[in-house]
Image (cartoon, rainbow, N blue to C red; front, side, top):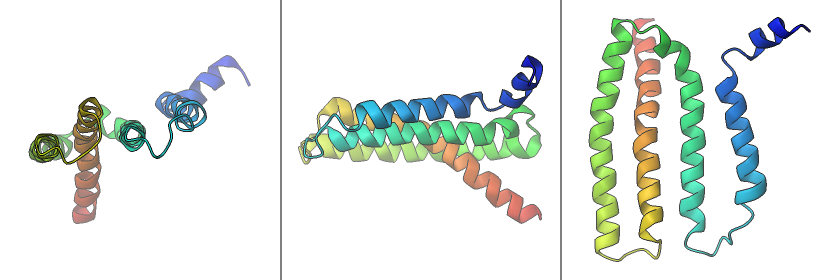
Length: 138
């Protein structure tokens, strides 16, 4: 296989390969280290899963967002509109947890999870609205 053909094979799969390498690093190095009984275990795992899901969504959405048409612009606007309100709900829930002292989870980990959910929500809504619009048009 020549170098040109190898580049053609890898075109569009760079993010997938990076995601797989990141996943393998997480699985072999980071996940077995903390004890599941510690308060920091589950928020860290949630953060990692959100990052991996975000990478997967980016891989799925990249061909759709490269050549945006009017329908994709409308879907993007709708997804960002709803993700704004979802993020407000995440912030309110985190504030209640922190202010009422209802959780043993350290505040920096709550903020990391909050950032991860806020970053993941627009991509998930983009996929949801794109699939929904594809069903409506066909």
